Length: 112
Image (cartoon, rainbow, N blue to C red; front, side, top):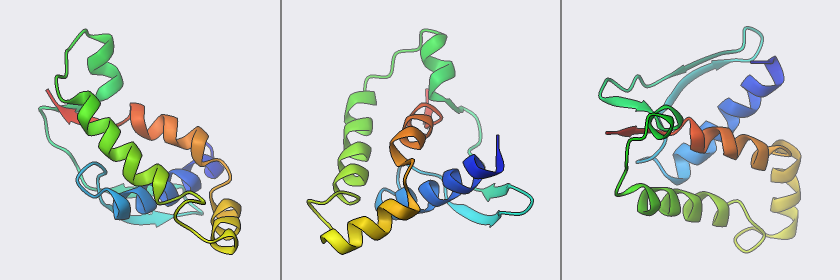
C-alpha cells in the first residue's frame, strides 16, 4: 500500500466509521509518516468479504448490510446533505473516495 493510499484509507475509515459504526472497524491510530493504521481487530469467524465470495460463501444479509452502509456513507458525503462549500471542502479531502470506497466494501469483514 502506498503512503497516499494509507492516508486516504485512514480518512475514509474514520469518516465512514463515524457514519456507519456498526459496519466499519474503529481506527485507533494513524501515523501518516510510517503509514501505520491501528484499528480494531475482528476475531474469527470474521473474514474479508472478498475472500468469502471467492470461496462461494453465501451471505443472506449481504444486500441489506451493504445497502445500509452505502446509503449512510454516500448520502452523508453528498451534495444532498452538505452545502456546496462543505462539499467542496470535503471533496478536497476525499478526492478519491469513490476509488477507496470500492476497497472498503470489498475488504468489509462479515461473520460467516
